[in-house]
Image (cartoon, rainbow, N blue to C red):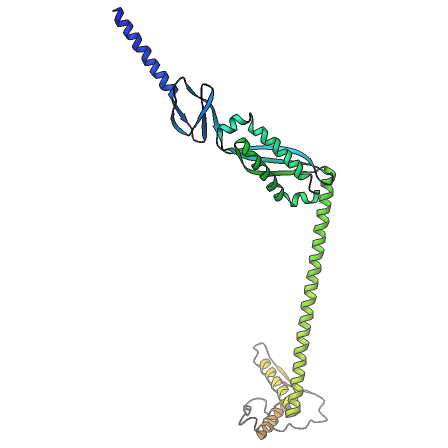
Amino acid sequence: MPDLNVSVILAIIFTAFLLVNLFLAIKVIRQGENALVERFGKYTKTLEPGLNLLIPFIEKVSHRMDMRQQRIPFTSEAYTADGSPVSIACAIVWRVTDPAHAYYRDQSVGDQLLTQGGDYLRSAVGKMELEALNSSRDALKTEISEELQRNATDLGVAVTSFAILEVQYPDNIDQAMTQQYTAEMDKRVVMKAADGELYKATKEAEALKITSEARSYELATIAQVIAEHGKATIDYDVAIKQVKAMSDIGSSESTKSVILPTNITESLGTIETVLEYLRDRGSVSAVKPDINPNKETQVQKDPPAKDPDNSSDDQVLD
């Protein structure tokens, strides 16, 4: 019995020893992390995400590093080249690239990046005028980000980006900049209104020029026609327009009575005269207006002479 009890105790001890060794040997690293392994206090290797095996009681995990991107916001006070104080809110985005170097090189990588970022920011802002600070914000971010990236290599990290969140000015400077912006916008409105008036005047002048040229061409054409064919040709065109106008008025449904001038027959006679003239000159072959004897108003070749006793110039046709 005593031998049996000793065997059981030894078996239990051995099983417990195996379980402890197994627990110490197996290490599971989560995704987005790396683990630093030390052997007797000295760094030996870095464990990747997943299942890893260590030598129990000899190797141990000294530190777990977060490999994801991290963001550090901060606010820095600076002075521009013209002596204006500004408060700039920024943020540094960085991540660990070499876990062992980042852990054993500096006690706090984040604090070191804050120190460097604030120093570079104050130096860059001190070279710029106040008015150029907002317009050159992209160039300022690029310059500081490049400086941080060059120095971050020694820390075992990489600076992904540097962002300027907000630029705050003293109250008096802020009010002056607001007034300047308002004056600039008013100036732009006035300039746009002036440009609109100039454009309108230019277009009106161009339209007047085109109308004048068209009128000049019309007069020149009329003068040429009169010179070549005589005034009867122009009288013919005027007569045609008069007859067409009377026809349009007479065909209107709302017209109850039509007042025709007494010289309407003269216009028709003029048409006949011009046609005879053009026929004699060979300009037309057989063009003659359609004169219907059944119409209410008869067209005569030779217009009758006006009655001097008749004081009425118009005839009323119902």
